[in-house]
Length: 287
Ligand code: FAD
Image (cartoon, rainbow, N blue to C red):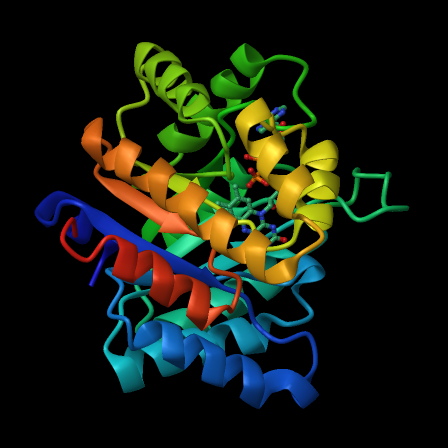
């Protein structure tokens, strides 16, 4: 099924994200974790794409397995930076043959040391979206950044580019994680004003590793509210306590989003079935 159909027909929507293995050694353990998450019956699952495309076959096989064995709608991520038109065309053909109808189209992070962009086939995600649109009847998602993408000078500039991306053929957007719902509500207001009308799925990260999240937030410029900082500072060195507090914080964010009319939440479940299960349980009377 297409994600656009799910978003049209079901409220509220809850989906989970998983990532493929980096090497064949971990394939079975990753596959098993994703299967446990599929058994929670999320509305859909998305499978990320390794930077540079080296693990593209794993993205495809994990997504195909979830769809065929567990009847879960899947979204395959696809990045284009440092890729070629031919490689993208091949991956699209494989997705079509596997009957995967949904693609999250991304530029990807620019690999270090690859500064000369003159020979690249793709510079931004909107170019990839144009090619996907021409290749078949896919439902296409794009990424968006409530606090602005790190490369953009201002949120306004990022929203101008986002509008271009959506106009190229996005059916929905999924946000980068955020820890303050007001940041998301303000962003939503701004993009609606800019004429972006597609559904926006709120991306929520249940934090289970305090140290890691501080580093990620420093790199991505994600705002950590004082209330959340207190939690990380207090429980960050106790993994079980951090997991419990992180899940509780994420649950509270999700309930607030649904209560304020946001119809869809995507949980960055990071191949952790126990985290996905707890979130689902916490929302059992709501979804
Ligand atoms: P774009 O939309 O191309 O934007 C990148 C930057 O360029 C922005 O600053 C934008 O404002 C600017 N820009 C866009 N168009 C133009 C233009 N025409 N002219 C000038 N500037 C422009 N990475 C992975 O490697 N694999 C994944 O599976 C993956 N999944 C993700 C899922 C989500 C929901 C999110 C939010 C991110 C994901 N990422 C993933 C990370 C993503 O690849 C990086 O954030 C990357 O740096 C930007 O990708 P994008 O598709 O948003 O790029």
